[in-house]
Image 1 (cartoon, rainbow, N blue to C red):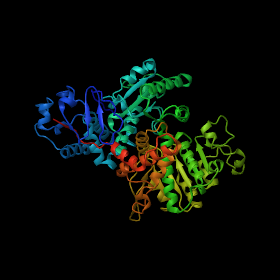
Image 2: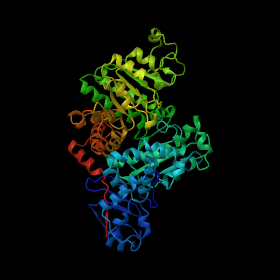
Image 3: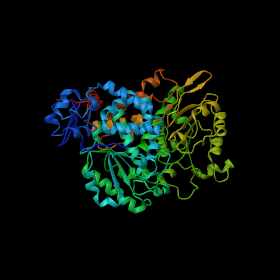
Image 4: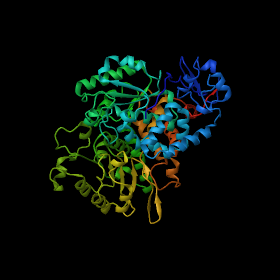
Length: 591
């Protein structure tokens, strides 16, 4: 999304447990429980200046008294609207849009002018609107970014500007952010290199931080690192807004990223930095390089791993089987696949396997076939899961060992897709899997929807309804023999907002692997998934995301204490702190 405002609104002070404020030399915003005196809090902002700040603007909901105090007389229609009236008007306009992209643009424009109303609308229609501001529609928003651009949000740091890194961070519209999401736009969802268009991902992720976990929108900062693009279509596009240059790689790229991290540490030493949609060649190594230097994580690796593990744990509970007894084939061996594999291994170790035994339960298949140690120049992350070439001698599959031959020989109980190859889970492959497994678990996780390895309807048809299915993008219920089956969405939004909230509230100095395992277990223990009230899906409904995030945040904060990266706080006090920090969109009162 593209959104912004003309007023510099910095981050919050440390939580007091009583109220939350957003302060600057220009303006202070306090939740509706506080009464705001215009002269004291707005520091001279009047008239259209007030209307131009999305977090201050109330639009037609300004009262008569506020209009007089703020110099708004005549600048608004005379009727004073209630929030419900504004929500009805906004939803009516949303529904009039005829395509997901048009709805995306409408919501971006609403966020540009009235951010509180934007979040009130999203909270009222979570299940309907989350797929618009996040996957799958955000992918089309990124592809069209330079053509639908309205107003900026966050920071753009281009490679030629690296000497100005400190000055750029000083210009941030947030003075003291709690959470930064950064991307270089090279691997946006399953769409590849979208250059500066990748900014839609940090903006969308931070929208979910606020929507799901209540992180105050005035304390979030999206950043796009523009190191060029290898997308020739973008480079030929006369409207492309990014740096028109081939992607910087190698030592020059690493030096630029290092300069960025050092500048962030100087300017925002307490911030949580989330890496998003970096290429498989950079994601894991950047996380490994910086995870002990600042509070940071990679959602594609750790968040995807945790949310996938949660779904598998739910499936295991329902079948009364241990995860350590499963055979797992994963199509795709990039950052997401490695993150999923690592989380599964951690869980299997907790069930009693050694690390080598746990790894032996996982088979990775990439674009060159099964990953094995006979292949030259394997990346380190893949090498950890490489099968011994000697064990494949009896397969009679030549040198490729493709997905079909792997499924035929391994008879996996779990099949996961992170390949962005639509239709890769063919009927033949699924029927082969089902011939040896009574109730196969199949997760086509690639985003957006068009990149899914299979559709839930096909998977259930090919398995006679026996498959246990979850997807990365939202899919409708599947109706078979008059019975509707809800398809759970393996959505990172059930994990990363809660991880962020738990990290911020606990004051964690680092983000540990244990914190993500705790997040996965908290999600897997969600009551609706375990008490039989929502037993046809492996994940909660999207409208439960805020409550889920609270549970995840509490589990993460407690694990941070156990891991020694946060100071000990009693459980009850920690829960109160989390509740106090979850911002709820409501208009402040001015007089």
